[in-house]
Image 1: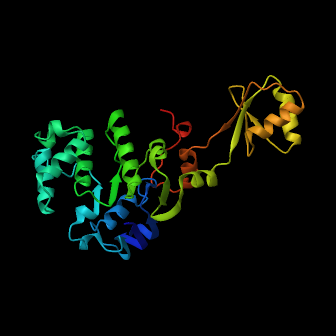
Image 2 (image 1 turned 45 degrees about the horizontal axis):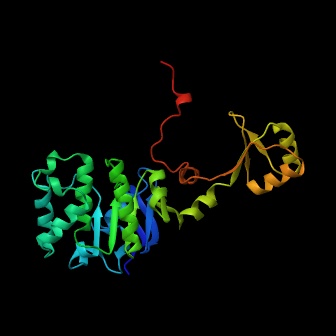
Image 3 (image 1 turned 90 degrees about the vertical axis):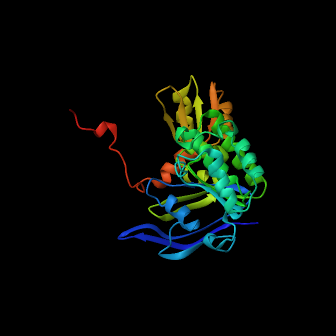
Length: 310
């Protein structure tokens, strides 16, 4: 099986350090989400792995060797970094045929990936006429062309319609289930949560987290319970005595952090307190990500409440 190995990777652009002593491994058999604010170093790291930039120090390899040294790179790793990279004057089929010829692949394989990506019907159209979503599908078709062991995708859902988003999500899961290594960079937290089983999170070029998805969420956000009762104040006093701190919300419900629904249900039952609603609220990837990366963003807008009057 083929993994991506990043070891003490550093990349400087003049006085700007884009990647700072980065080390992690992306293993096969799962989809790894690659997260971080703008300017965190995600795209630079992917370019370094693919040999499109040279590191200042450290190493980035695929299967223990540099990608640039691979005899047939598309069979080792397929990548989508820029949906606009294909020449606009070419047709989709000609673009893929040129890539296939460089790797001694036949026209049949081109036809397969065009069909798999859902763009066979527009294969004879020039790429400059394509929407962003169609260009994304073409880029993914190119990444799949060599039937690679490793797939690296940067914002693959960008520009796709709902059907396309479901397609790429299922594709990534299937490829991982086949034992391939799948690394996906995205800013869409809810979408990442739907397909990734593991996370690598960067901030200002440094590694902030490298953990299974649920472990990452649990490490950042405490569990909480949502409840609603016609005897809210009585229940609140009772929970305080038990060491729990319920906080009233604007909709009439209460939130209790670091608590379990069964625990609160038992306390209310012992005192015959009526409960209208009692549920565990699952923390989200977005909450955990924002909790970790606060202060790591290169760019941040002024909160609306602080905007000057005009």
